[in-house]
Image (cartoon, rainbow, N blue to C red; front, side):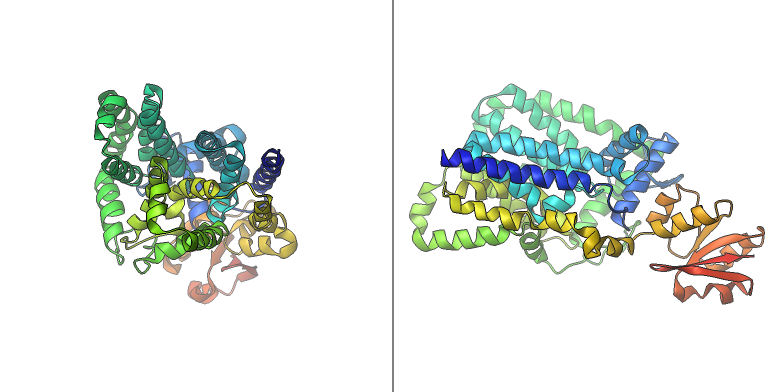
Amino acid sequence: MKGINSGWWWLAAVVIVLIIRFTSLSMYPLTDTTEARYGEIARVMASSGNWITPQLEPGVPFWAKPPLSFWQGAISVTLLGTSEFALRLPVFLNILTLLVLVYGFSRHLCDHRRALICTFIVISSVVGFVTSGAVMTDSAMMLATTLAMISFWYAIEQNSRRWGYCFFLALAIGFLAKGPVAWVLTGVPIVLWLTLGRRWGDLWSKLPVLSGSSLVIILALPWFLLSELQTPGFLNYFFVGEHFQRFLDSGWTGDRYGTAHAEPRGTIWLFTLVAFAPWSIVAICLGVARLAKIRSRSLAGSLSSVHYYLGIWCLWPPLFFTFAGNILPTYVLPALPAFAILLAMALNHSRKWLLLIVPGLLMPTVVALASPLGLTDRIEQRTQRALIQYALTNYPDLPLAYVGKAPHSARFYSRGSALFFPDTDTVSKWQKNHEVVLIAATPGIGLPKALNTESAEYLGRWNSHHLYKVR
């Protein structure tokens, strides 16, 4: 009875976090660079009707990522209109689907209460909560890798052909979400587990390898071929540049769409500690306490096949990215479901663990209090929404141009109407053909002097940009 009662508390905590996350989807603008860039790509896809090649702007292909997340965003924008909510909703639904998968799998492995704890760990961790409402490609890949790992386990342990096909479907989804890295993050743990358990025979007897592989080819390959035909050079940049050179070379300068995220090798473990907080701290404390009581031999003997499966699944992503030259904290996302299941399984039925709901609700509480705490204002400093809204409201008939590096949020919030010029020479030539224009520039450009005109009226500063009305 105690387990059942405490289960209601965990369920309530999960529901609270989901409600806060859902209601916050439209609370803040798309921020530069990631959210605004991916949001603009989805908007351009929906407005242009080009569903093959993701584009930063009409005619400028974006080769860094496959299309799945952009397809999701474009469909949502088409159905709901262009808004922050429409672009974030598919991400939220990805995580919601993931939670259902994780709950069902952990419920199969242990019990209802621990399954609820597991879902709460996933959604209330720093990286889980942030990712569930951020316009990025990572939620789609985490859903794909999780479906692949869970499907494989069911296919092998239950000899289920249906789950076997789900496994190959997940591989196709992962490839369309992030590319071959999704296969690396699922394939290596599976190979290691099969090898350790000497179960390679199960792979061929219980998995529809040939027909499943054909399914992957049918679902995933056509887009890559069509994209290369439409924009030659894509395959070389995507596979060689984005995956091999980015991984191996921390100083890679071939990035067409930004800068490399160079970090000292091994930093991914620090990222993991922060990303899984507060649960990473709980896991460390619990692990130290257990190891102090259990000898290594008895510990190894107490581990089952599923413990090894989850452990390899959990450790492989950070281990793999230990050797990467360019990393982000979200790279550890595929490890989060396995981490959550292992931690939930390690907690006994004592009601004292209900106290963990408090730190787990910390992140959602901060989001709910974003405006009173002034966090919304700080987010606004990473977007051009306010400047665009001011220009469109007060000067709807005047063309707006940016000088220098083009903020992705300016493209998105102007719905592609803002113009972008690399320097003052080019914008000056354009400006002379118009009676009155609006020009936005960073302070370092010194716009009025550079344009050699005294008829520039200063309208104000929004974050990193000054806005002028120039005659």
